[in-house]
Image (cartoon, rainbow, N blue to C red; front, side, top):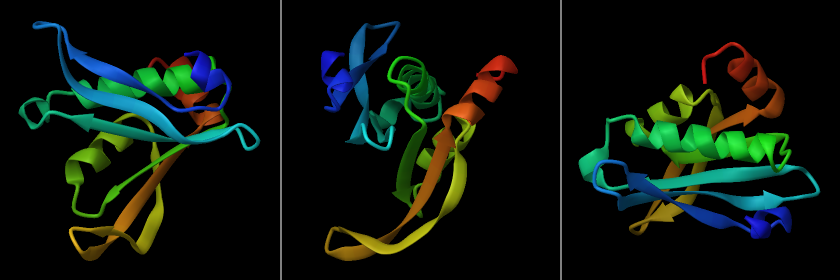
Length: 132
């Protein structure tokens, strides 16, 4: 937690409540104290996809980023074919911003990335409205 205050990234474990086993991670990366923004990253064991766990974890990290770290913007991206990750970001209140064309090389192929973001003011509105 102290690392975040110094503008360093850290990783939280996603723990499955029933078994108390680590099933993924969620973190704030691509940090900028100057611009008060960061990028969200998360990975979840495939066996737990579709259960709302990634969305729950992402909402908690957004809350920490905006509430404790006082970030202004948190963004995230996913491959254009990663519908599951897109749904996680949308359900967490993030808005689709656009597509970065052929910006990452994955398995030897250049791929497009969909970009999503949420601002502190938007997150605060969602939280006050009881939707988070």
